Length: 171
Length: 131
Image (tube, rainbow over all chains, first blue to last red; front, side, top):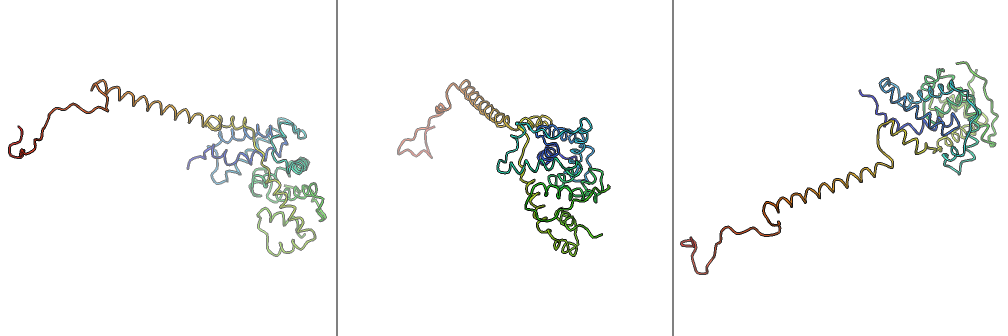
């Protein structure tokens, strides 16, 4: 069976990858650079694509590796959203909520934000996220749950339930 | 230790298998309904993200992927169509020009007669028509 067509992979997945990286970095321009790097690696690595895994899972693994490489090159600083970056987000009606959500996401521990966004933006399952991040599916489930509780607490004053954020779990 | 009811709902939202009795117990927990609605609201908020990369990004990616598209594509197709029309017109003119050169007249004129047959009233041309 032949390797997947890189143009088709790009058309199908680049928006999810870009939005994942934008949420992870807080910067659209940086997310563009990283998305470009992701698909460069996709093109170069087509021969190594394992047909047993889903395309999106493979691409998000690459996206995570790109992020890790960037973090190794530079200690992550708080999101610096320029005016040009802000113009890319084109939903004025939800701009305030989006900003609060972005801020709440930025305050999450890295591994929780990553697992949560892989689930919600990439649509990956617990096992796929666990394989990409080197964690167990149980730890992944807990990370996503903790992220949801923290975001819920940050976003909504209407939440009446007592929120109990569990302590860190081992991998 | 019994599982956290909200954690059960979180896993359910992610498509994980949850036993019906465990789910029933989780939904009876205080604040479970609100939590489930809030979790779904978070998902909807993220799904509403319509941010896109800039035009420059797509130009760079087109070069990486080795394809033409975007602003240049319609112009390129228009140029191809115009070139095809010009070639067709030149070919037609060439054929007409060759015919004029060989036959010495335009295609709209009738050909010169090589034999004239004249019918005369009253003459039975079956038996002794003009030779």
